[in-house]
Image (cartoon, rainbow, N blue to C red; front, top):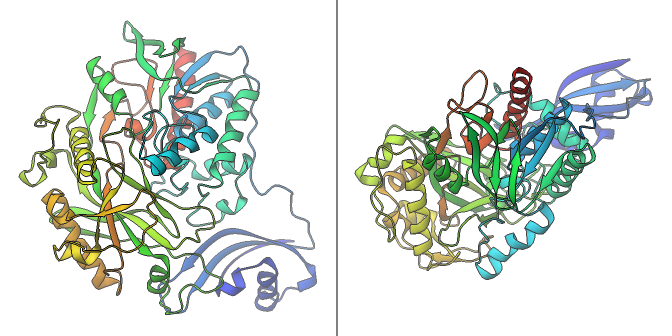
Length: 532
C-alpha cells in the first residue's frame, strides 16, 4: 500500500528517512519493518514560535517498492534539419525555450554573447582579483545567465505564469537533486548550477540544435514588419522566428531596439543596497535561540516588507550563508548582488534591501543624481528608468574610487546618518570602503531605507545592528525596460515572429519565472511558424 500523510515534526525527526519511518510507525500505527521507503513530497520550516517544527508531506511505501525515478522526465527528439528558431541569450529563459522547441520538433539556434559556463568563471573571478570587468563575460552575461553564478534560487512569488513543477523536473532530469521538488524554497547553489547548465546544453546539441558562444547580436533583420533573422558580430543567422531572451542587463540591446524604432516602454523596478549580517546572528534571531540553528536546521532565511511614504521597502534575493558579489557588466559601474553555495554554510548572510521605484519617480527632486558623463534624464524616453539606473551605478563606482571596491556603511550608522570609522569583516572579495551612503544616495531611496530598517528592527529584535553592513548598490532587481508584446501571442506588437522573453523583456523575475516564460514563448513561436 502507498499512503500520504501531512506531518509536523521536530527538526531532528525530519533529518533522516529512518527517523521519519520511526515517527510514522509510532504515530500512524504502521509496522516499522513493513515501511520500505518514505518520499518527502513537500518540506517547509515553521519558525514562528520558539519551538521550531518542520512540516512534511510524505509518501509512504508499505510492503511496496517505490519507482526508481523521483521526477518526471521529458522526451527530447532529434530535430536535425527541422525548422529553425533563433534564441538570443542562454540564460534560463533561453535555455528552457530551446529545450521546449526541441520537444515541439523545432531546431533551436542558441546565440550567447558570453562564454560557456566553465570558461566564464575565470572572468568572474578576475573581477575580484584585478577589478577588471569583461563586458561580455561577467556575473550578468554568459551561459546560464545572471543566475548561474549568483545563487540559483528556484522559487517565485508568481504562480500564474505556468508550471513551476515542470521546470523543477527538468532541472532534476539534468542533474539537480530531487530534493528541490519537496523544498518550499528550492535552491541549487552556485557550485551545482554549472554542471546542470552544461547538461542542458548537451541535450540541445545532441538533439540537433546549435549553440554559439561569444556571438553578440548587433541587429534584428526585419522585412515588412516580419522577423527574418539576426545579425551578429560573427555573421547573419536566418529564421522566421526569434526569441529575444537577452537578460535584464543588456542595455546595449535596449538602445539598439529603441534606435530602430522597436516599441519599448519604461518599467518600474527597485533600488537599494546589499545588507550583510553574520549568519550566526540571523540564525539566533530567526530561530529564537541564543545557540543558533543547531545541528538539524539550515542557515536561517528572512523576508521583510513594509510601506514607507507610499513605496514598498523590502528584502530581496536573501542568501543564507552566502557572499556578496560584484555584478558590474561594464568597467565604469559598480553594483552588487548575492549568492549562496548549495551547503549555505558561510559566515555571513545577505539580502538585497530595496525601495520600489515607479517610472514617474525618476523625475522627483530627491532622485536627482549629478555624475560626470550624464546629462538630465529625458522624461519622455522609454529608457528613462534605465538612465537613472546607469547614473546610480556610475556614482557608486566613483564613490568606490573608480574600482570595484564597494562603498559601505554600518547599518546603525546609516540609520543615524553617521560615517562609519571602521567596518565589520565582509564576504565581498574586492574589498569595502567606508562611505556616507546616507549622504550621496538619492534621498528618495535612503530615507525610505532608514525608516524601513527601523521598522524591521522593531519587529525583529537584534536585526538593526552595528554588526550589519550596507554595501552599495543593488540596482539589477529587474529590468527597467519592457519590450512590449501581445498578451495572447507573446509576439512584439510591431514585429511578427519576434518574441520578447524573460527578465530582459520585462516579463519575468528570477530563474523559474524566466524559464516558464521561455517555454511559453517557444510554444507561441511554434504556433506562429505553423500559421505562415
